[in-house]
Image 1 (spheres, rainbow over the protein chains, first blue to last red):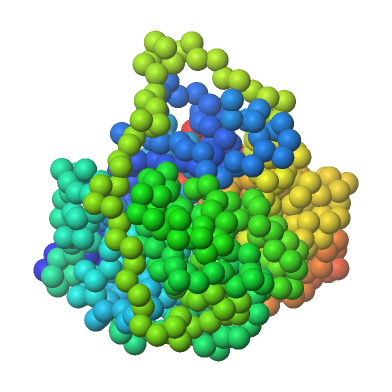
Image 2: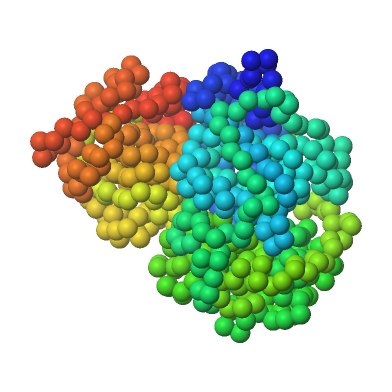
Length: 84
Length: 520
């Protein structure tokens, strides 16, 4: 929120610099441009399936990183099958 | 966690992340901003974990909903970037949207060590910036705190539970796995050994931290004291190994202690700082580290942390990407897709669950649980197993229906499997006293409508098996109407509240965000 003289807290500076739509009013829906996406493997395999369902040509953010640090204990063949 | 570097970083479900990654941006409810003024400096043995536990003590697990916590004041510069990371990691346990620290001298220092000083930009609030709410924490007045079983909001001073016998102490995981955290534990244990009645594990936060503790001698100190060194992964925090005995305290530096999350039904997990955990490991009972006398110096970190990004692989070029063949084992099953919202929602109440049910109750983790996360029909068999093992079969037998929840329905992890499993089971609406932010959005993204009781006490009037009919739902959502009336088979009328942004309404009408974006 902006003070009476237009001074801003850091949160609204960051949100304002990425605002694609909506107004910075608490409770209102806002759309933000995304600089970075981080995806871990446990929720990430489903994210990848959903991404595929959207049928995009390419990843369309400046940086997206996917890493494996959750689903790392192979108690049968399912896990290894997923990480090939 | 990235809020520690002056970023606005927010957790989200997989489909919302996929949508963002495809370039559609990310939408969320514009938060209120709480200005948290930190004053003074932490006393010995009190760590940044105690700052976030203090906020959890004040706010509980629901008090931060719709809010960003922005840290300001002279005390901020006394916290390192990794100290700040501990606070940002756990801000979501308040139900909050994010935590933000300024980009200051400490940030620059950290980036320089990571050979990224050129990425630094100063980021601060304007000097007279205003906040929707304010909070003050006198750092020097804090003492070691601990969250008792089975909620991160169940916080008391360590001295209140001191003397409680424990058989397990776990340090590390995503939170409190920095070099300083592990070196603090090593300093406590250096001249001694872990209590014979205790199993202690230590999980470094990354390959880089494993490398630095190896070269500084902290690794050897911990091994010598009897700690079991684990690989740098989530591990016991999500029930992958180290499942404790039921009814026996396990003391951990992690961020969540929801019932059963450790892998054991009836677990008793406590959450605390590395200093408190190390003192507890030494004595075999929950211990206030201040009883150990003056803190001894930690082994300094090597000046060069061996930055090495060779294992971060670049994406293939577009022409190569087209030819990539994706290997799919038999356990990778395409996820279910939502259906357009019908005019009338009819069905039975398949289950009524209590307050603060976590997404871990809907899609359990652990090595078994997570091995099923690409296979929703299998994953759904475990939904609400802790509450009611009959839920899955009943939902299928009744052809879906409604779920009724209490406050803070769906707190915890962002896993969208907690929305995909009920979608697979034919659940079309969840009615609760209140929802946790990410899960509410995940339901909408999958085309399941979240509804609220207009009178909170009506929750008490709902029973499993009741037959509900909600007329003209589609029309109401399309018109932005906020009230729906339920006709129940026992003659009672219950009023529900529809609270959706215009875009969320359109997504629900379409049957989820995939159909919405395809214009179906």
